[in-house]
Length: 72
Image 1 (cartoon, rainbow, N blue to C red):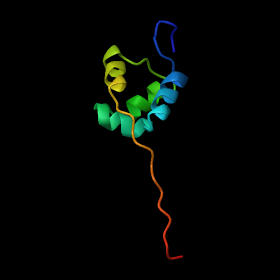
Image 2 (image 1 turned 180 degrees about the vertical axis):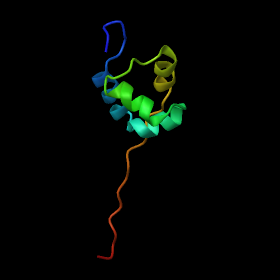
Image 3 (image 1 turned 135 degrees about the vertical axis):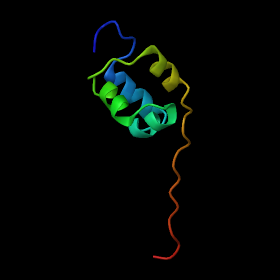
């Protein structure tokens, strides 16, 4: 990624992970094709200002609760 971008691919992956979002799920939520966001996350494409704005609006997902079955 160029130095002109205000976010790099590693920072974007960390940002999504910190909110509990996979790149695929985030792409669907913000209305971009999953392969486009994957390319941004892999450093193959620059994120647009619009894409960054949309990603910043992603809510943090609640932690996943795993319930153990009483019957084994």
